[in-house]
Length: 129
Image 1 (cartoon, rainbow, N blue to C red):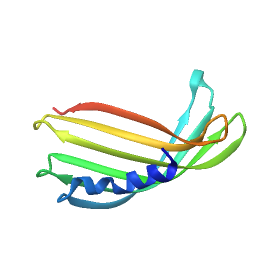
Image 2: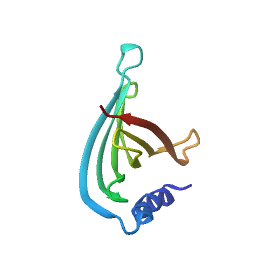
Image 3: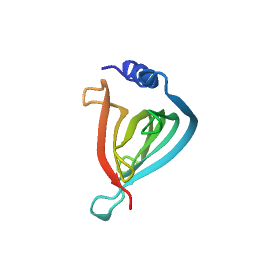
């Protein structure tokens, strides 16, 4: 899948929730640093614009966001600009339990220099007391 196809798919995702009310746009700035064995190896700072909303009388919440990602590699002392994005949702099972999931992606290059997208995901449950 090309980066352009990924961007187009992410941009079209909100329309999968037709009839849902958008809560609105937002800006999310997030920095994630890596310290394996206690030594700093790099960081990624995302500057994303997104949209979030709810559906099914508030039982389903969702979001989509994307924008530049500044990836710093300490070993090379270099920072590259990539494109990153996320799409996620949570579903209220009852008043005490919800489940959620997220799929994220960031542009990159493989060993041959071809454009690729590195994907990640998470799934979980949230219990409230």
